[in-house]
Length: 169
Image 1 (cartoon, rainbow, N blue to C red):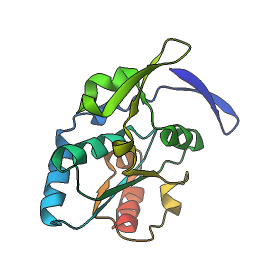
Image 2: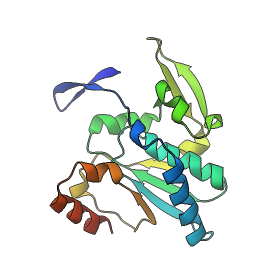
Image 3: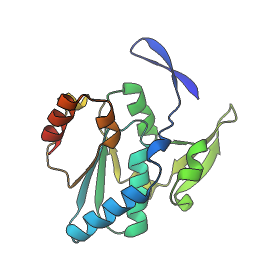
Image 4: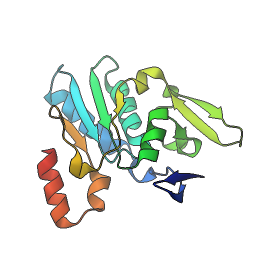
């Protein structure tokens, strides 16, 4: 855990998004999408992007399924700080036990003795971190084949959930 300043307010940042690390759901969805779309390139959207762990996990899963498949994974978050961390493409080391395929990372220790893991370039190259943006203001240039947004919906009212789903469809 470390502190960051966001919008003038100090707050603790943990980067713990372990709730979705049961990669079986992501694996099933990506297998299904690859089957449906044949050999066509896939466009995937992950939101909220948080610090980028979910998008990187999906990239690893895609590599597991078909390392030669063209997949573009876009992600964004409302937080400028989280977006900055996502662009750096590091996992907190404590997440390593939840990573689906360990060969995609190398461990690194910082000066404070914290362990960080860095994805390989092949994994990172599939992930495109978009500028920080609130989902209400997001507009895609082209449609996505798969959208992962389970965590986002938990934080919205029923009306906002409906509006978001219509906007993303």
